[in-house]
Image (cartoon, rainbow, N blue to C red; front, side):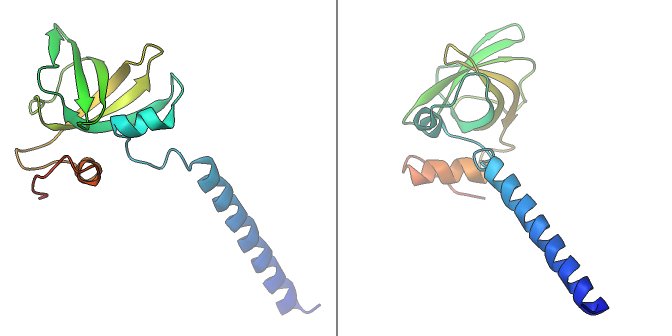
Length: 145
């Protein structure tokens, strides 16, 4: 085999190994690639307690209860609601009826224990993924900025 042939064989072998590694990584991460789940998607998925995820939707009207730094509220996609427990300071723009994305773990009691709460930045904006999920279900008709 010539020097050029050996080099070509080495390059093809390296590309095959790289492709296999990328395929295995994508296969392992197939469920974690989603930016967030809506409460309805989470109910359908049957996620095990303790799993780290992101939940997106609207803060349900009348669900916010504050007790010092402890806050409980519900995130809804207007089909399903998910109770959220959070300890810490909420963003200034957090309020009922507005879009949020919360990051944390699902508890054994069905309550989502949030580590962080992200709120929209003005009265017309909603995270694109949240708006798309709500539009897909036919429950959100607002303008997308």
